[in-house]
Image (cartoon, rainbow, N blue to C red):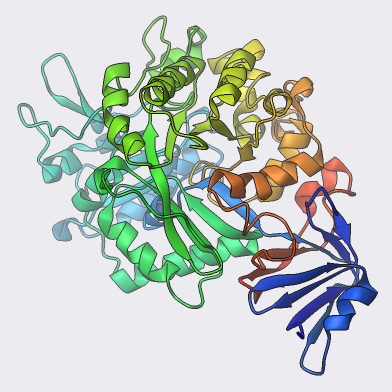
Length: 550
């Protein structure tokens, strides 16, 4: 048997504990057929074999985006960006909004929609309501402003009128989603936890479907340029947006595969998805996703202890002694999960605060006591303030966490000083604690949460250093929770593959596995920690097909 491709001349990192580094690797069709000494692997070479000289670069398994939102993130790109990625002051944010509004014709009822309002990272941003937006952005054009975490949105009065929202006519959008009203029942313009399907159906946009699909094509290429070969979508609720994205994901030129956790609204609990085969499947349903709380920045992370009593917390409008909120009662959460558990679905739940983690673990425990399921791999997402004891309980139950480590880098300073305090802040994403219990945890970015771009090396470097960004002093939060670069890489590859039941096909470079790989400028296991984020992706291979970006 002759190989189609043989890689030599570089550092080939397999992340296979039995043989972590090899001299050469061979591919036939979409499968790895040899990995080992160069002389041995070259025995598979013939006249048609392509020999790839890595020229000292590194080859490793393709990254798996363990928790991201490609449908939601792409749909937000329909809108004007006002995020901290492009704006650092309130003046810049409002200048962009006024300029964008000035290009619209009020007579056409086109909406001006903005994404990325972030009061944590741009701290001179004011609190919003319909009247404020009328005065400071526009009263004649419908204006909608969406927060960076998509947990809040604000309408001006024209947008409220266009949406038909008024006293006595406030739509019900489901648990946790509500238009805020004043004491007289008048909508303030604030929508908590907005449903994207509602926004997409309400805001009038001029983009064609083909233009939207082009945004998807570019977004999937961005994942690949960042080194990802598998993207795991953790929930979207806009059917039209999903439809367009899936059409692009099935195109031959799409450089990533897509595993989906669907929202209960769009899932038939009675029909469990089949186990995936990445050697054959490009797109599949992996499980179902629930949201049990929110995040610290919006005051919706459900905490055991109160938020800090700071001027910043008061400006955000949190009530006194605020501890966040649970999306559902425990009985309601169990009732919604029960049919999915009974019919064999993998369940994933957003659970950020320690109070929420307790609720989710209790719910999982009750479901498993009623109907035990071996190797269920139920997930908890973000788990920002999960405790050491809760990690032990999760390990005993077979529940697996996925950590949003970049919360430390981007929001660590604000969380410690303004929201939850330094003691809780230093134990954000306690990776080494999870490791001590034998968890096969993953780490993730949670796009579209800032940044809108994809930076796996940023997450890896943060897992190793636990430093906030340099502009915030590069302070180390909880050095005792650091992990090694090797374990951080595994959290983006083989562990993430295991969490989606694909560890037999993805996540390491071993004979028999699918040829999903990334070529890197440098070896992340040997460069200094401060240089990890400077590593460049040279190319990716998905199913053995090359995608080159340099």
